[in-house]
Length: 564
Ligand code: ATP
Ligand code: MG
Image (cartoon, rainbow, N blue to C red; front, side):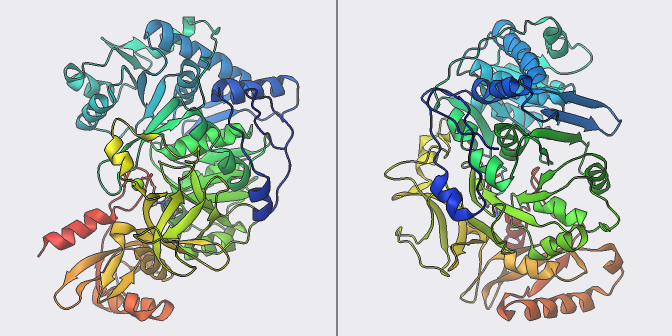
């Protein structure tokens, strides 16, 4: 059912089956070959398996959009097309191994082809979200010194407007039906490109990609990963958290600019030979998601808590999901209430995963493990995860501290290489023998990790430390609350108090706000320790979020503190 890499550069061996956490930990021992290239050592191997008739007849890639257009590619077709793109990058754009390529496309099939072509050419892929402005593009082009940009006709004018300030940029590839002056036509070029290309023989530690972090707490950081850190490091994600096999069809709803798309839209599913399903929606639409889950034989769905919060606002009992068996959530903590509603209405659990652009999966509730709603599960077998204090002492169960990963004496192979061209910032993540995630949490007696909040988001009120997630989860248990953000707000007596920004469910919009605030405050006092209740509350139509759907608490907090 599973595959394990070997030192000889990717001969695939039959694997063992795991059902519980301890056996995963004992038996999962990834081997890191000296040379490793995901396109050659995984994708092309799956092409061979497919040709031998040993893979189910699922496509490797299945794309649909709102207009009923559909693309289905086998691993072989992906191989042929991506080799053509590799030849365009190499021959027409003149790119060499180690050159950086910025890729900004919505969820269209070409995005996947460029991903694979960059692997084949050894060029470093830097994806970005389509929501970038000309100013963001300039910053990213200058910072990355990218030699090539690949985008569509929506963003091309913005690139043209700043191009004169980007002296490293040599070629611009346009993915569009029409031609544009100064741009190479992607579609035209691949029509005539050769499908013969020999994959560059990359060393496992050669850089493969540089994703920008979500920018939840500040400027997004350009985070470099190697062929092995992502290409092999996402095995745990695909195998144990997503629980994929080659007969599965996975839909990950995340934006193409976020590292989670590398995890769940490219590498983790293809490591397992599973099918990557994509419904290209101009924007997230709960009805369309539910409709697709009902219409297509999707077995596994990976989404962010924000999406699940929207989905449970609908009546799910009337949905007949065709093949859905496994649901996962990552990116933010998922409220136990949302997990409960999803389970009651669909019969399915939500398995949580915790990680960062800098890491791969750090903790997860793996299939087969008992779920503790509100917990992030247990550490990935790739990492030694601990809760530590400011002096690097490992804290006992129940005590809140920094979530940290042991990096000495040996740095885990699946941790990022560094922030691009910024060794100082990279070094600042290390304290003693640990990489500091910047998140706070605690571990319980059973070894499950619990997220308290980003270090900056934890509220310190009259001597009590309050994690925003606990307050938000308590609020979400009230039917009036769709979602909320709890932040610190100044208070003359307590120094700071909890303020909750709340998005109300439609049925509650006409209620007397003062009464509703008191009702919600009483509710929080009842369902959690009373000192955590939000002393201040404001109803809002929406919360500020990153493109990847994360609540920007720092924006709300800043506004509160600017008022004084
Ligand atoms: P930036 O570093 O630019 O501020 P970011 O940290 O949001 O942005 P990402 O790397 O996309 O950028 O997100 C990683 C962070 O997301 C984690 O450090 C953590 O704060 C949060 N996160 C991810 N998954 C979970 C989860 N399951 N539970 C709680 N928090 C999570
Ligand atoms: Mg971060």
